[in-house]
Length: 146
Image (cartoon, rainbow, N blue to C red; front, side, top):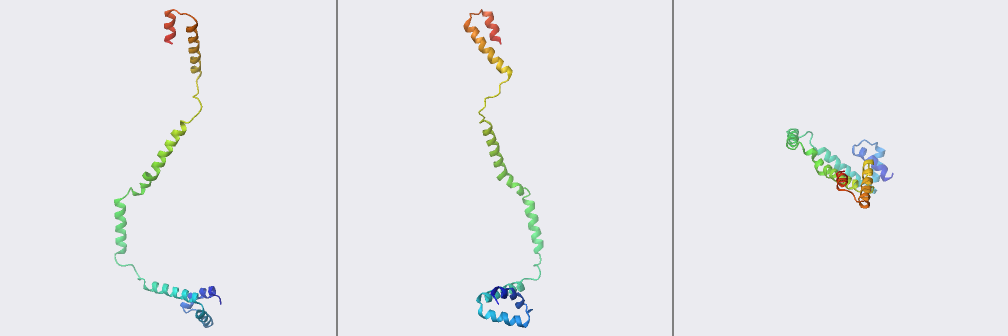
């Protein structure tokens, strides 16, 4: 038998639930395989640890656990929202700052309305008129009032 085949039989060997023929084969293999002997020792340690565990919980264990849970919940009810201040708000601030910077990077000139265009044209014509002709004071007052 191979080591892997014997390892699959070891739990049954420990429980004494193998037929006599298989017991002889496993014991013969254990005599020559140190790896299988180590596996058998490991399984025996697990059995001893399981046998040594207490049958029931110590008295008062569940009461003390429930009391500690109640104290923790009463002391720090807002603790569950701590991540908002530590992680979410800085990310939100960075996003707002990034949007503000990217919004001001526009290379396009601001859109002009028809009124802006006409006012700009009128101002140029008015300036030409003032430089080309000598106007009376009354006309200048009218033009300046616009």
